[in-house]
Image (cartoon, rainbow, N blue to C red):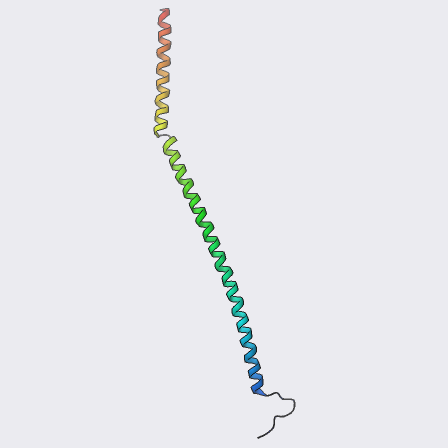
Length: 105
């Protein structure tokens, strides 16, 4: 059995210290990675919620636009009634004018 020489470190102590250091570094890196993943997951959830709200708003606008077009569009009942009212107004106006002119004839 030879005694360790001066100036040289014990290889077992070096290995043990290195393993302890690497274990501590690995734990710290895992903790940082977990924190970063939590932040990413939180961002994804927030963006998903924002897109869901935007989708609902777009759906509501599209439904409102479709309803407005059905109610007030070119071939809607309101437009048909408006055209009929215009035609009726013209016919009544011409009839009234004819009755006035007839008084003078």
